[in-house]
Image (cartoon, rainbow, N blue to C red):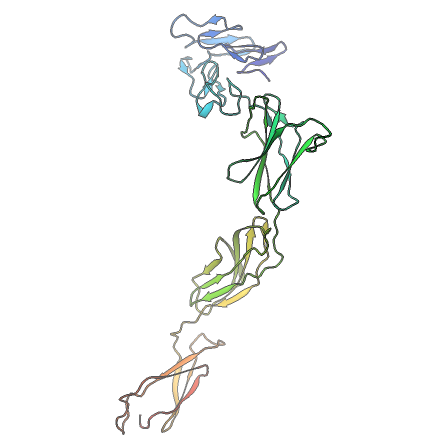
Length: 402
């Protein structure tokens, strides 16, 4: 239905609602007027068409243009116009409202045809074809002979690109080519351009804009946008050089992942995985350091990491294992003197509970506190220490009768 402003298509053409005229009902009569040629006048009083119900063939009766409500005495809300306020305003500049009687805007948003601001200027309605066979480049292909919509005839094309979330950059502005065999940018009616000096492994958006002979163009949401990732590499193998630090309750893992060649895909995050008991757990981090907490002493985990790049996942690291430290204040059991001699003694002990099978270091500290028979005795004695793995030790060089 090409009839405007709520008009109805019939075998004889558009049947316009009261208040609109023209072969497509494109012309609004304005306030206080109606009829096929807008020659009718609603009222000679200041109320004009307020409170009137108007009817016409092929169209149901409705409040006069610009009004709505049970008694047709309420003006249209901002953004609406026409009979019974049933028509939505076009793209008036900065979201302003249109004329409630005709739907006309004082000014249009950029890219729309005045005065109704409902029809966009000429635009390309298809997504351009993108290929990325070479590093840092995108080849753009589109057909200027198809997919053209909007008002006017295309005279100029622009190819624009941007990184997602950034402003558009114009790559080329050229005349729309004819099917001239000498035009090297045209292949079977299609245009091909190559955008260069881009960044490897970055997502780019590309669109094609058209202009008419008066340089009017539309660049709104009706223009289709294509996007692609520029070519980049992901290594088949990589040594993350994982370093591990532990205490009695936590593990801290650090690693490195640096581009060794320029076309590598940039890192977006890291996926870390660790094995607790019988299951693998996973998390995502932006850092090259990850800490696991709330473990018991002598707990073990297996850990691995891989980089998540713009082009996908890099390979996993080798799996590393780590064990939390045992609390150094664990008490040994059964400290016993095996034998005593004039200048040495032998003592032994058993490991703390819960340390079976683990390699432990023991620190044996001893000091003379009293010598019964001789002077000056233990007056100047200092503490001695022995560190060893065995659970039995001989302490030599002692004073007798001490």
